[in-house]
Length: 314
Image (cartoon, rainbow, N blue to C red; front, side):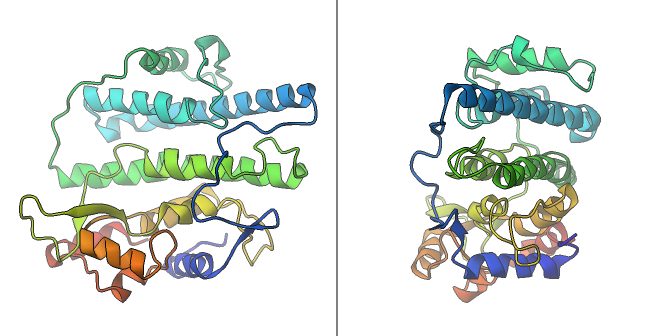
């Protein structure tokens, strides 16, 4: 295990933020490359159909993983009826519809498998797919229960986001190792890493009930602010393909390692528009170390520092 404590995460982030990584011999772009959502052109129709079947198996495995953990942790999450519907809509609109290469928009209950024999799974799949014709979930009253939000954050990061990240990490590394460029199941264009960063780590619901603020935020009505990630989403996205020095290649972080990385590094902050501009001007918009905030003079407001440290310690 490479990630055991905060020191390891800091070192990993420093390596990522200070290195010009290459992907298949080309310098990696900070933003997702154009065309990453398009299915690759394979050498034969037979290979194309074979890889489509592999991706169908993978998305079924992923849906079963999500439902199994949902089944085990549902009572602890204490989701309202509306919040539960929001989770199902998320699974349909972000995972099924956006899974590479956006080719599961015709996913039907008959396409689903239940290899683990999970009780109620097929009914859950049907309720998820209902959002193809109804995107409404209703309105939910925001809870100010800090303890509930702390518990939800821990459960969502540990049993959902970390588990999914490990799953995607594993199939990406297997694809790199087992298939040559031009014949990979997920192509050569960062499709899985883009999916992980945007649709899983950024979009997974119910993990951000607690909001932090920089000390410069005054709370004055009309003040221009920016909802910002302390660590860019690109950091988490890139971890599934960059060459880790200790293993001289892409590394499959365990779900425990992913949870530690997310617990420490995934933080969201409301900063002023000026502070956001300062980050960009200093070259810290999409690639930065953990010291970036202090380097441009951004501090978490005093009243929130204790909770900030509590939530992001491992």
